[in-house]
Length: 220
Ligand code: GRF
Picture 1 (cartoon, rainbow, N blue to C red):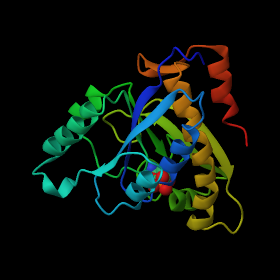
Picture 2: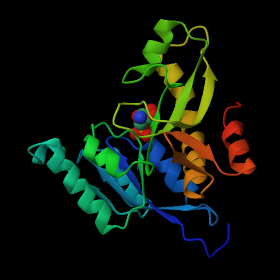
Picture 3: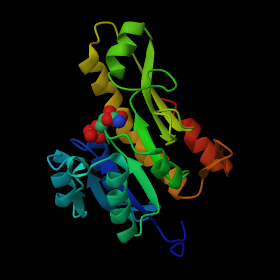
Picture 4: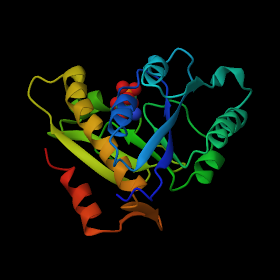
């Protein structure tokens, strides 16, 4: 990437331990990575990820949702933090708060999420347990653009893992999270680097290299 192309200014939104956040911060340290993580926000002041972000030298702050009367005023407070930091892309990483349709629509094509299943299977919570109960042999994770309907946005990239005999939700989750940490930085690089974008409700890949990079994320 040419030094003349400015890096995209990214905020990561978390609610918990922030292991995906850590993998994104680490990836973004590479000089040629097309995004810069400039802010971490959490709706929970006790999120362990806040301290992990600060240890990595990234400004991190809590916007405690319990301090707001409704979702719209919470989202307005988030928006103010994002505006103050000049954020161009939002990355949801274990952010467990439903955002208003107005906020999601304002960030259409500029906000992505990682979900621990091969979407459109197993939207919502407890994905690993539900995958085991459904008896699927293949499970994984998906990075998708955020749309108002939960976990329903166009898919940027996916990574698959086998479901093995004897798995429980914890062993399966442990296998999936390894792939999440690989997939999310790669998917963000595709978008921030201009290789992929949301267009007409689908993800468009602009170069053969970007399309191939997305396809390569499928293989284990
Ligand atoms: C991940 O499994 C992610 O897919 C889901 O929430 C979890 C967050 O984990 N959305 P972490 O906080 O990144 O460790």
